[in-house]
Length: 360
Image 1 (cartoon, rainbow, N blue to C red):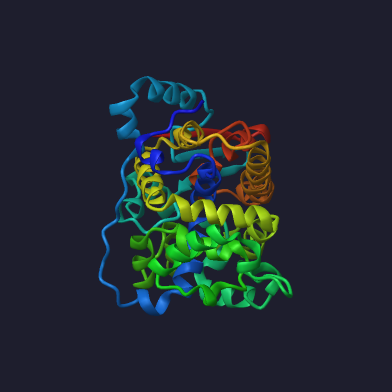
Image 2 (image 1 turned 90 degrees about the horizontal axis):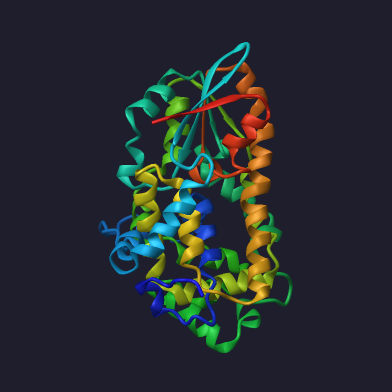
């Protein structure tokens, strides 16, 4: 039986796979929060600042279950390449380049990069982000919205027809708290509705006020400084990861997230603290350790989702970044969770003959 920290005890264990929800938020929060901010822009643009809430699950575990925390730290220590955000990339015949793990958030602490990272960015000729389309998100999203297969349900399908009555009530309650009537989203794919309830209110307010998340700020700064800007993926590719999920998995993700409630604030707070400490290798062991056990179907869905969301994208990014690294003097900024692990970007680049060294 896995350990459940006190905040998780608020949840009905028979329903929740919060690890799946956390994985989505951690990897795609920049996209999800933009979609949410776009859909809720009119009510967020003039909103008063909202303090970010959430408890640090690591601190709670240190107090209430230090032995379990020690196990998590031990597993994190065994995770390859999980203790640094900045990496120097060297290859014969090219100037050194840099790999930097970002957090797709507007938190001012996240935006304040280390001196070493800022110096590497300033000195680079080419800046690489996950998707260069983030410099014009409004235009890119408007274009994507014209493809209903990515965002809308099929003919005759509605959110009401996908969800059981009790589940629909859970989702509707959370949507009301966000000021969204169920009729507004009834024809959207569940992942779109998930985006409206999964992102902390403080993040939405900052987005509504025009504050850029870290990756977008780096891309905008690159263009302002006359640097070359390149992307490793398209937003359509990223959206397709979510829209490609079976509808029953999307629906379960949506309902589970609605049931989680304030716990997602705790997830964000915890992951932000780990990120700021450079301990990205501890994030997934913590998620796994505090995940409530679910049935085999949920486990299979999570494994398939992780494969598509993380591992396949890691390999795609690694292949697409090689010609850029061969040109040299590049600063590559991608979500920090793409860096660690045996199939993380650091390991994949080493496998391709590059020398990749942590800068701490």
